[in-house]
Image (cartoon, rainbow, N blue to C red; front, side, top):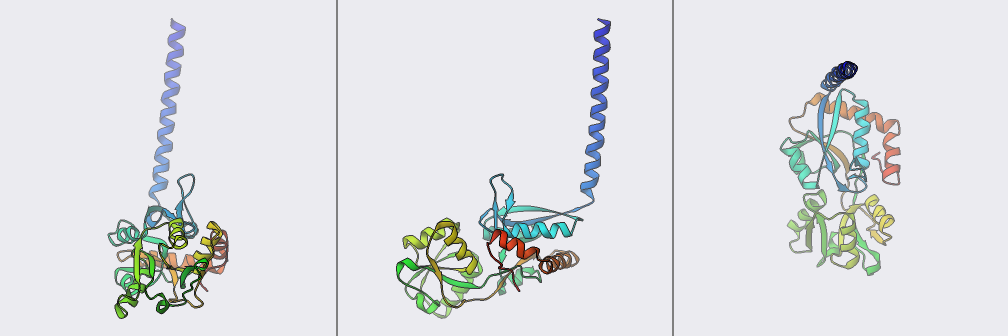
Amino acid sequence: MRKQAQIMMTTIALLTIGVALAGCNASSDAKADSKTKTIKVGTGNDALPYAYLDENGEYDGYDVAVVKAVAKKLPEYTFVFEGADFPTTLSNLESDKVTMAAYEYEMNDERKEKFVYGDVGYATWDTFIVYDADKKESYANFEELKGKKVYVTTATNQASMAENYLKEHPKAFTLVYGEYNNEQIVQALTSGAVDATLAPKYQVDNYNRTFDTNLKIGEKPVHQSDAYLLFNKKTDAAFIKQVNDALTQLKKDGTLKALSEQYLKGDYVSK
């Protein structure tokens, strides 16, 4: 009995030491975490190849990788991703639920009023009219879409530019709004549910590569722009400058080009 009691007391002592040590480690980690400032980043969760959740439930994609590369340059910050669809991400940024957003955002006047744009474009986003060449009809400009149905994702710059055209040319074509993923956009085009959509060249290249389709683009873009990081208007100007400086370095050292080739299968970095 005495031997058993001694063993029990020894076990309790060891457990007590273990708990104490664990408590020290937890305290140490908490202090380390408290040294960095958390930045919430709005992005997509189903937008291949830009921003999505991988098979492990982790955020991945070109835009996500760009932010992660920026994070390595700014170790005093911890970047945490908040996924949502395209318009919700903008709403979260406007309401200050996130500090910045990375979701292939182009410049337009409405967004300039609501947000602060980064200075460095990290992807070329020249917009073309996209159509299924197997349908034996092609469209080079808005004028040639007369009487057609055109898909646009809600709250995107593509929707805005089409809406602006329709203000000057009422009923020229019909806009079909949605939150389609890549597969649904391709299905809408190939099934004839819509006649065309608007997208950059590398998005169309991705559609054809992924779904073995024959989508084509018009000869010239209907709009020219780059993709930029967006910031809430309350964001500290010094932090925005740090992000801009980091992106500039990543462009110069070839990191952005490497990420573009990895995720977008080509060099689509803004020059």
